[in-house]
Length: 342
Image 1 (cartoon, rainbow, N blue to C red):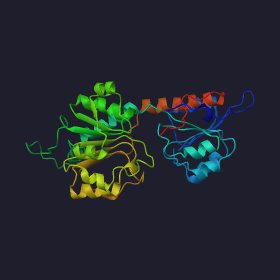
Image 2: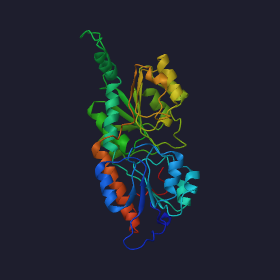
Image 3: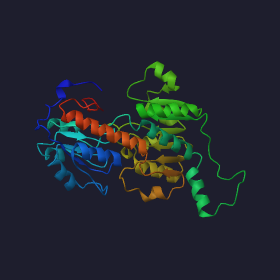
Image 4: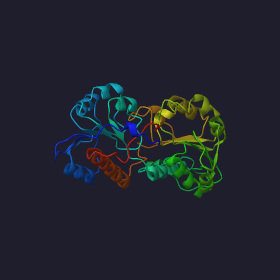
């Protein structure tokens, strides 16, 4: 991210001994909330409900710093209506696509995030889906629980091995690279598409080769996994046409954002058997999941748990605290989201 010193608003003005008023929109780790209560005049979300639009507006009218998450859509209208004292959006999580960055900057509000914390957690979950969908792990687990399993047989519950298969990674940032590192250990042929090619030395270390043509990557890959941020450019990136390019034996894995995929087109392809299956941790209309997806046996469905580890959530909370403290002390927060983030 390119530095841009001119984008730094002036330091907050406060009386000696004052504490910033901080509103946290979701329940965080107990140790994080306890530390926030020590340091800040904090308002916590005791029952962990997702804030309504009215609740967000009320919070933004009466705090110095808001701690939002991916469930909080902070659009230009909400930000424009924020109180003058709100000067920091200390986001819990790396992705800030739910925040209108331009509107926040125009109002002199700093945005911070928690980059790098969930890289390994999300890569681990991605690898779990890469394994579970071709090997039909969810189907097998349900079969055992149903009581209908009648024992081992040579032709029972056959799936596909992943060794030797081509893994196509769309988006080669921190998480994409972590997935490539793991996939190499399983003997997969890793290829990737990215806005910019990685240095050759990093490609060699990861055992990954660059494919500049996304259509070619989609058409050639046995498993496609998505790791790009949600943006106007990536919304619907995997659309009906690209899904139509996939092999009938191919699988789609999405632990990034639901809107990157045309969900209706994906369901149509799965129902018709035009692709072999999918592993999804994110959806277009979360928390609602299309009933047609629920009915499909060749899909593994997870409840947006790619980053759900005790360790990761604790460290992310600690980063949020550090960002608020640096900002309130008049310093640039360590994780300020600068111009050119996307």
